[in-house]
Image (cartoon, rainbow, N blue to C red; front, side, top):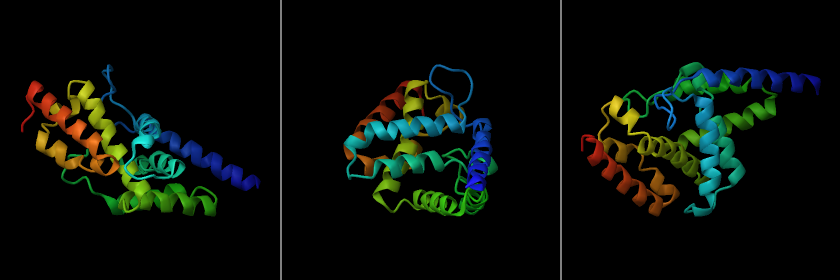
Amino acid sequence: MTENFQAITQFIVEIEKLKKVERKIKPVGLSRYENSAEHSWQIALLALTLLPYAEQTPDPLKVVTMLLLHDIVEIDTGDKFAYDASHDDYENELAAAQRIFAILPDKQAQSYLQLWIEFEHAQTSEAQFAKAIDRLMPVIQNLHNGCQSWLEHDVAVSQILSKNSAIEKANPQLWQYIMQQVIAIGEKVGLRP
């Protein structure tokens, strides 16, 4: 049992590194960039808040666990900007997930790795909802911080809508609301159509 506690402690210390991974978006009202640990916390809470409005009925613990685990790979791979054409780096991210989760006792390591893979493939209702929430958070931030990352990276409204259409799987009405907000603010700040 002591070795399990040592492994868990080592894992927790390892994921501390997520606090150093800088994302491409600034928190609302701040001049610094967000880190991946902050993102993980906020999307977990966003998911819990939106679960009553989910199109399906995903398991809350599974959704939140996926959201807390999905970006851990960024310790090794760094954050990839969602609108970057080379964003898909599944093989490197899988290797990072295997390395990091292997720190844990075997049963937990396998469980976390399977949840990470399930999130990435987005085939279950939990993974689809979690993916939608992961996409939604930066949209909310951009809508409330002057479109900072969209403007800095010259992202067009059509790219935003295409990249974030997974939100519709979580809730079609929410997606309609978000689309309207993106189009309106895009016109206001001069984003390319």
